[in-house]
Image (cartoon, rainbow, N blue to C red):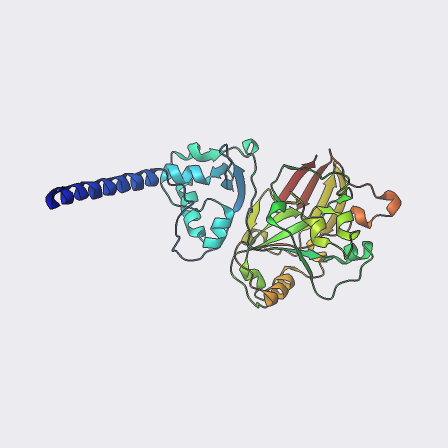
Length: 347
């Protein structure tokens, strides 16, 4: 029979072993820290003076990059090298409001003699998705008068809202794999300015609406017009949210850099040919009106994204005898002033 003394001795040894193992695990975790699992407790700050992108890494992860005059800062690599905690994705940055941490990391990189180890040439980057799991994806229909006219639709009296799902989210330079013809074949482009929320907004005024915006992106509301308009009851969501039908990028640009989002040139090119050319000033409902209206319906949260509508020039708006739908092999470029050119191919 085991004595009480030997039992306590054994138990003590086991406890010490567990504690040692826990200490070793903690130490290992500290060395391997990648910023993904943490609890940010600082003030909520939105990014300013920043152009950000997403980098797809060899291990399949998608992490944050900061575009600078000297190249792109690999945030994950910089965080490990300089042992400075920082958000590793755009969504983490927006939800936490941890822009202060990112600012500190960028400043440290720019003042460090070891900075070259974390700088990447942008031409060597495989772009990842800027957004992978936003709380809400909101889309606006018929938000330019000329587009409503070419679609033979009435000018809406309030914003027309619909949605996409996460499966539609795609990266700059992606390839969209089109579905079989029996599913859909009337594919169309829609270049749109993406509004990215940075603070929770509920029932805000138009005058205050832009204070809640973190930044903007170039985006594409790629569309299957036959699914959208030729199925019973008009399946807008179905026609807009097939896999990969929502490319965004290449950059997120902070709101302070953009200034007025209501005066930006917006264009689409198909195989080098200009198809859409307009300006965000021609929106029926500008960014302020959209945010004020949507925030009356529900709370907009940091990281929520809003496709703000497309101008005229889409294939749907052409005379039927001139409608040549997009096909495998086509290359599309969506361009918005100050936000960069989003490119993707069809297969």
